[in-house]
Each structure stands twice: as structure tokens, then as C-alpha cells.
Length: 365
Image (cartoon, rainbow, N blue to C red; front, side, top):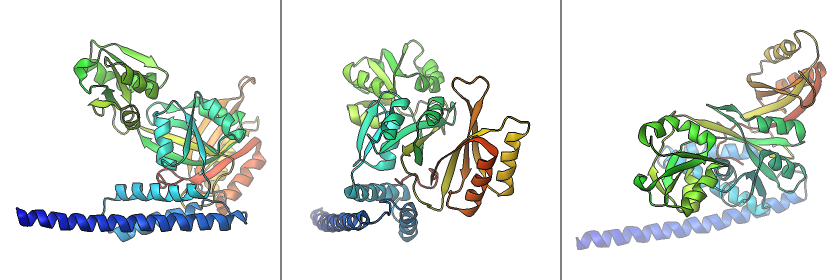
């Protein structure tokens, strides 16, 4: 046992030395990032090069040879990369609050922990803050795999002049949490109405006599649970850490694979990354087959249409604008050509942005 104890001490000494080397290298890396930031200050080049970051992740994953768990490795380097970039210029990110909501969690997933986060009460406010330049970016939900599109986000694109800078796809897992972590202590379950709906069957089978309380957000429910030992909340993992709660039951959602897509909005879309999506907001001419003509253009240019959604124009009866999501970047010739043709055929045309896809760049800013 004594020999084993000394061997453990020796290995711990090696770990300490490795940690010191990692810290020293992190200091060197952030120094290099700041130097690059100063060099870019004298040019018109953007601080963020999405293609460069995508290449970094691909190289690291290839060199890893599956030795270190890939998801953890990506998460670690995401935090390192975003922290180093933010050292060039710190940013403020507005999001649909309050603190510890799934939107907040999506923002942290995208920008890392080093950004300054600003919770707001509505999606409309997030768009207004970004448009007026009071925050650098905003994070808003745009669609859910079960509930469908978030219409308040789509409508805000019709009202405010912003551009899409990125997207995050966040798998939504609902946890029943409370102050004690004991399900027996819970006399009321509070959460956002959508979260309650997505856990309806589980609650009916497992807590049939416990009433539910719809509140403004999952974050607000978590805060209530932190202040009242008899309230349970359906909340995110970030809410658990933020409010010091305990998990009573993990993963109580009725359907697995529930995913929400969030958009990052700003004032300038990023450059080509090689795995991008382009979004348009268009109005068609008032004639038969107008929408079909636009879809034919996409087909002729071999452009993959990922999503199309119509929304009514406020104050104009029976008139609609269409949101189009297509695979590719506006800098690609086929996308640029297709968009130019569509523009000529539309009564209204707005390019909302080209940005790295969430399924390829979930750990990118």
C-alpha cells in the first residue's frame, strides 16, 4: 500500500506539471490572440474568421485519434477559442431572459462564459437592442422540433434591420428540480407553459395530484424553486447551477430528441466557413405561380432549400412575406446567382444573412 501511495503521489506530481504547462500555453495563446487583434485593428478584416476556426476544430479532432472524448475536447477548445477572441474585443450579448433560461444556455454554448450577457423580457427587445447598437449580438429562439416556428422571432425580422450571424441547435432536456432534490417535498410544479406541455404525460403518470403553475420562463420557475422548498421547477441544467438547485428527476420530457434552433443576430454576417446557411425574407409578385417561379430558380441553381415559412404582413390583409433558408453562403457563386435572380422576381427582397450552420458549427462563435 505504501508503494502504491508513493506511485499515486508521483503521478499527481506529473499531473501538476502538465497543468502548469497547459496554463503557460494558455497564457501564450491569449497573448497571440491579442496581437492578432491589434494587427486587425489597422485593417478592415473581421475579428472572427469562421473558416479558420472550423479548420482548427477539424485538425484537432483528426489529431486526437479519439483518444480524448471528442465532445469534451470540442467543449474545452470552444471555451479557449472564444475566450481568446473576446480578449481582442469584449462583447455584450442580449437574450430572451431571465437568467438561466434555455436561450441563455444557448448563448453560453455559442459565445462561451467570457461574454457579458444581458437578459431582456421579450424577443422584440432583443432585436431592438441589437439594431440600435446597444449590444453586439442577440440570441433568440426561432423554431422547435416539436412545437414549430417561434412567430415572434420571424415577425421581428420584418420590423428590425439586423443580420443573422449564426445558429445554435440545443437539445432540450427537461429536469424536475427543487431545493432539496426530494420529489416528496414538491407540492407545485412551475415552469414555462411549453415546458409543462412537453412533460404533460410524465407529470400525469408520476405526479397526478400535484398542480402545475405556468410562469414567464423556466428561469423564473427555477428562481421560485430556489426560494420555496415546496415548489418544483422544470428547468435547464444551467438553472440548476445558477440557483443552487438539486435534481429530483432527470429527463422528464415526453419525447426524446426535442431540439430548439436559436439564431444569433447582429449587424454583420460572418464570412464563408464552408458549412453555411443563407436566409432571405421575400415578398412575391401578385400573380399565379409567383412562388413556384422562385422555387424553380433554386432548383435550376441546385440550391437546397432547408425551410420556407410564410408570415402575414401587419396592417395588410391577406398579404404575406416568406422566410427562406437555403444551404450555402452568399459568397458562393451559385447562391449569389440564385439570390440575384430571386431579387428580380420579388416585390420585396431582404438578405437576412449567411452564417455557419449549427449542425456543423455548434461550438463556434
